[in-house]
Image 1 (spheres, one colour):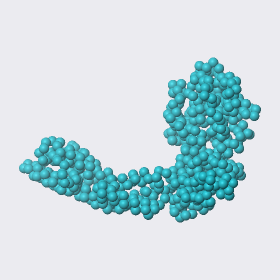
Image 2 (cartoon, rainbow, N blue to C red):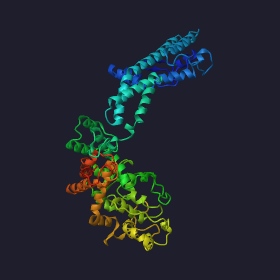
Image 3 (cartoon, rainbow, N blue to C red):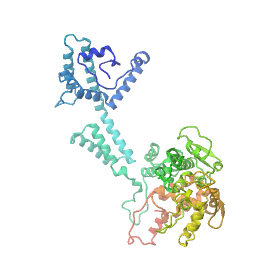
Image 4 (tube, helix red, strand yellow):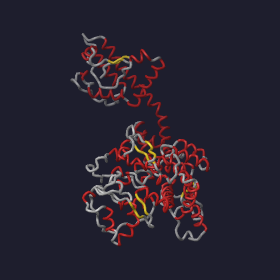
Length: 593
């Protein structure tokens, strides 16, 4: 509470001055107050005093606390001095704002008249005059500051629009936005702040903000025209949303403005810079989350918390974060793409380290460390991460079918037809089943309708039986039976555990994994599904990847320098306008558009 001010001095609730002022008709109003008199008088020099005064002024400019406190007082207590009773207010002025000078001065006059009564302390007169004069002076000064800042805020609004559109405004856009603001002020009688807010809303509702025009087909393209190159700003957006899943930063925009972003060396340098940035985790979350299908893991509710008490919210978040940390490290440090499958390391925080049986990690849940020789703890690479093992389990048992399908479909890129409409269900609780899951699946595969597809992926899931329903390493299932992780993979090769899956992929399906990774990454960069015209680019990507020791930067560089990435797609042509064997269509295939 405060009652009256001198420079940096306020009367506290328990002061004698409070009682004398209240007897004179001066009442309390809640508000901010400065309590920095010792700092101002004993420590700070003149420069420091001006700086802290400036900070308080800036605080009031933003928070508007003087005006809000005065308004609160006017509606809560201003009527008492006029004889309307305790805790009463005055009538709202019909022709003024409450913060206008005539209203403040009228209230000052009323207080002074009451304080001038016989027996009142003469100090009250000076205090009241000082108080109201300071309120009025402060409000008038802030009013001037707000008026003087309007042009700068309008300029900031225009800069915001350019940032939102991810390119400079055209003259028409610039003029239209200014005209809209002025219409809101003149015709709609909005305040400057309300007009700015409304104009900013119009920017955020604009298609130029809501949509990426680098993805739109080139307009007005004839059948004979070549693909239309992206503008510098469109290329900056495409590069940024590819590598950061966010808008371009200032450095990228400077290169777009200078017109050199389309230069091969500059483009590659920017791509390498962006891959080193922490913001690459945004791309990993979007790309890997969709590729490996763990985007919805944070909402999973199939785990029985009573049966698996270790699976709490902290562990679930850590499981979700592990592949993001792992793949982000691969992109930022230009590791081999093969590490995604074969890497003998992973990243853990305290909850995940404890769950995996690894050495304790000191720190909070945001503390992540790299663990080498992860195979010692039955981990390493993406395949044995708990997030994938858990999301592919129905809750109270494992599911070799879902786990195997995830490996074959997501990691190796195979297309598996959907199951038939009626599929016999397996027991929901592994602890109550009469047979191990391996034997139940063997019976299931005796049905010829099911055998063809299940033979393609069940065996991979069975190799992961060494992990329970929440991805915990185990030697016995929930019924106490020893688990069997031996598997016969397609082609007759034998293996055991996730190491056996890794070895089989290295020997038989490594090329398919790399090709699938290339396709997924290219599709993510272009925001569309792969097309037949992309095959040439994909071949070049895979060739360059092998030649560069499978370094992930190689894939990114091949993508950002490809015709598909650098050009807009040609709008679809009718069959009558382009002959299937015409040179125009052949040219389109060659350029990847």
